[in-house]
Length: 617
Ligand code: GTP
Ligand code: SPV
Ligand code: MN
Image (cartoon, rainbow, N blue to C red; front, top):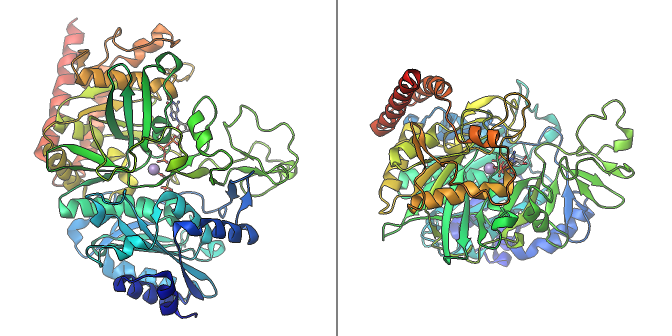
């Protein structure tokens, strides 16, 4: 191996704890050499990746990559949170003792980088100078150059972040080893992969993937799992799978901020990139802060604030087009340095395509290859297979997003006016229902349910609970999580208003989406802010306040009255059934705060009263 010390000296790594950490893992993995990376190495690394055939040009200033065929999404079963304390075991965190898991990961990683470079990627998951800085710094070690290219887009990367730490020991140790992808038994009984967060040691050890959140460790492993654990143990903040936006009203000159969680592949990116519908465009503007992660805390003045710790977008490609998300298309236009993974690629024209990009795939298949690299023209017998993988994605840095907020880099983040939850639910959930009670808001987040999506391995269409949309990233017990939520938000002088939204309700007969969605989703959010300000009063139901029919701004919207009616009504019997499922679900969580059970019982009782009233009426 090259002299590690000399490499670290040349790169200017002065933090002795970082140096020890790099040395330890370089030895253990037997990497051929180490290379310290900063954001300004991007152009050189891109060229090296092009030369090595790891990426291809997708027009000018854009790139294309494929991941291994069995490595296209997060694997929730192989994701584990380990600590020393068995009390950290929750229902969803796949807790194991660290004494058992760490040696297993070390065994897999031992010698696994022989002959390869190990890139040292010092990063910061926060705008620099944020009060949450002590939790934001990490160093990813990775043997995959394409992972480095993604990290440079998704987080702030540079040696200065580790050298300038107030406490030089407080960086997350995030080790990524790809492993021999062709012999890992992905998805079989003999699966060799492990995606481990040793939360009480702030150490992340991921083995057996080079895709997405499995490999870009700043993102969900640090930004969500580790940060959620740190936020809880320090008692200071929440780390959530939330988008974060501002809505500016040109008429009043005010900007309000909304954050909220939808399970993976359920529309966070779309909402964060929302372009106001034509008829409302002169008055309202949505600005983008974040589309996947928010950290929330209450400042010394009692104001609830949030930052997006990320520096880029790792967005779902499928169905992104001029109608659904023109902003995303601009954010990945030529010259942005965007990377596409697992979409279809034309090696002659260097174009990319994915399902939903245009109604039909390119008519002339010449030169087109599917996400596996197979020529479309040679895909005999499987012509119905999709061209792009359903979880294919684009990676682009925040500065490329046309509606990026002017103050997205502000270390103090933005004050939060509203918190929304939403999932893919084909029935029961109305377009929006507002909740102005803290415990009921937290209860609503905890009972968020959604149909499964392609972002995680699993069955599409199956309904499952996903508390606050954090289920795949939960790192400590759910009861404690609820308690922590009540404590953090409870400390805010001005409480945010909560709401549950659903863009995905369908007609029971012909299955069409009742709500046009996308840009028109702004209408529901505007109503929520008006409700908070007392400009509308809504209609109280047992499960929250719904817009009265005349309160939604429908200017320029063409929607069937029957659809609107269904979107704004509550099926009490259906809800009563749901309450029984919720009861069983909540019973799994020990130490669930009494306030949450009280909120549940209040809702159940209100539904029963309503049913009785309807029965009499
Ligand atoms: P992750 O990055 O996986 O956490 O997901 P995300 O929540 O950011 O998902 P994204 O915004 O990329 O949404 C993915 C899917 O939701 C796409 O297939 C979109 O077309 C669909 N979608 C988003 N918004 C709407 C909407 O308002 N209505 C309908 N019908 N579909 C939507
Ligand atoms: C998600 O699956 O929720 C994502 C993509 O945002 S990944 O980073 O791969 O988890
Ligand atoms: Mn996500």
